[in-house]
Structure formats: structure tokens, C-alpha cells
Image (tube, rainbow, N blue to C red; front, side, top):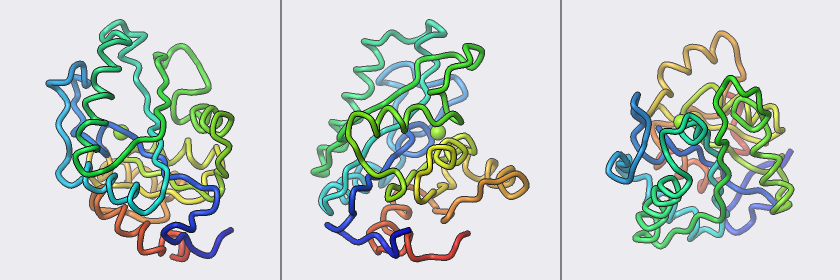
Length: 200
Ligand SMILES: [Mg+2]
């Protein structure tokens, strides 16, 4: 395992981000349109900082709203475009977005906690998953990253983070770092200490 991750020297790793509850406020009614999408303060700026540091950012997100028939692919694409525009205001860029459209009952391998989306990303971009970092707000994010062999996992307290940390303490896998929010997670990543810190 790499000792630490340093700006401009990220090896072949990338930073994977979940969307809802990490970048934008989650909603029990799901995010169905651009008007439902609200950035968590500091998150778009944080992605800008990752980009400025030379790190690739890839979104990995469950979007069962597609196969539930609640959101069209076109509407989802509008929401992603809105997200990317918000990030661009801070000079940031999302390298790619991988989403799972399936409902939980479809039994696919790409819906987190399955690792499939990470493997899709690896196949397309050839990053080293063991040198990569996943930032998520749910147990499913941590489980999926663990199953895919992602090197480091950060849980943010926003979204489901607080609730799911209690679950993870009992059941694992534990995150390497418990962050206040994405801005805090990015500060930790850019300080190089995520790869050198002790396991949570
Ligand atoms: Mg989430």
C-alpha cells in the first residue's frame, strides 16, 4: 500500500465520489430534477481543489430512480450537467460518471454495495483501485469500495453518514477517516494524510 497520497503524485489512483449526501443534499423523495438538487456548502469548491491538485474525480452513484420510472435518462443527464456546471464555477471538472439504474430487486452487481461500478470505471480508465479513494455517506459506499479493493475509504457525516457510522462500527467495513463533509474529506486527501493515517 502506498505510504501517502500527495498532490500531483497520486500514482494511478483517482478520487471516487458518491453523489447524494456527499455533493448535494439527499432527499427521502429522491432527487428527481435540477430543482431538487442543492449543493452541500463547500462541496463544489472542494471538487475544484481536487482538480487543481491534479486528481481525477469520478462519480459512482446508485440511481434506481431510472428503472423505477421516476426519472428519465434525459432528466438525470440534466441533473449531472447542473452538477458539473456548479463544479466548473470553482474550476473543477468531473472526469466521468458511472451510475447504476437498477432497482434493488433486480439483483445487479453494479448497485452499491456491489462493486460493479468501480470495475466499470477501472475497465474504461485503467486506474489503480488500490491507490484510489472513495468518499461516501453510506454503509453501501464503504461496502462497495471494500469489495472492489479501493485503497482508502472516507465516510462523510453529511447525508446518511452519522446514522451509517453506527452501523459500520458494528458490522464494518470501517472507513479510514470520518469527515465532517466533503470539504473536510478533500482537505484530508490533499494533506496526504489519508494514505498515511492509521485505520479509523
Ligand atoms: Mg449517498
